[in-house]
Length: 268
Image 1 (tube, one colour):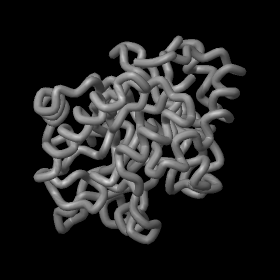
Image 2: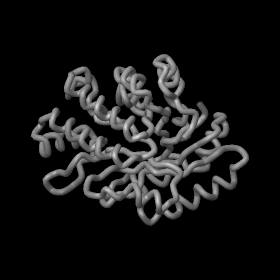
Image 3: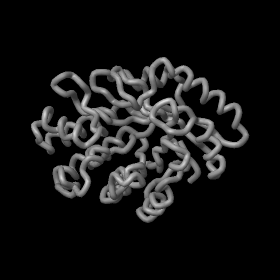
Image 4: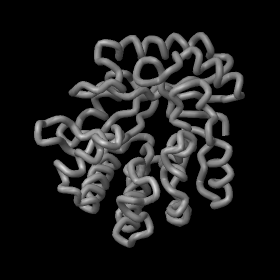
């Protein structure tokens, strides 16, 4: 497996520029590298591409594709957040940039009373503020809403579904909810069945693991038997934001995927 399709750069919240990522990928013996910076959002966030820089992002990928065409295949993508009030975002970005692929993700779950989007990847105190102000500290209600958005995301048919249980990013030591509870497992299983029905690819994302935000990958190993049973196609991505992260956690994830005999794709 010599690829990474979940790659960020200086255009969003990445720390390395795109050519640095390409050179490092070649050094690692990659045959493909996909760029998937966070697509612009209809409100401010520090980690998404600014709308006025989107054309430059596409142009630079096109340039690098030509420059390195004899050394590595570069593919053009975006990580697109699903927002229920902007359902056409996927088709619009795909058409605008003539994307080779898209990654679908959920980072926002509804809004604070002041209208600000609730970023579930934010700092813990802001997460707990949102949990209190929006969901009245009802963790189950919050988790159910997250998965409701996941189901809607999958129906948009992105090429790849990113970090499907990203919600556990704030659930270290399972203080908020237990992934073994029947109600949680039912939500996850429904999402996995939807992935299979909609013929999209599931990402095994290593970032939470190597950044010590979780003790597992996204999705958790406990759900690998369901993934195997459904024969869902998977890829492994490091969600790299720096050249040192391109291969981070990948070998461990690959060994685990092979142990469970999952349907690991050789490329997209």
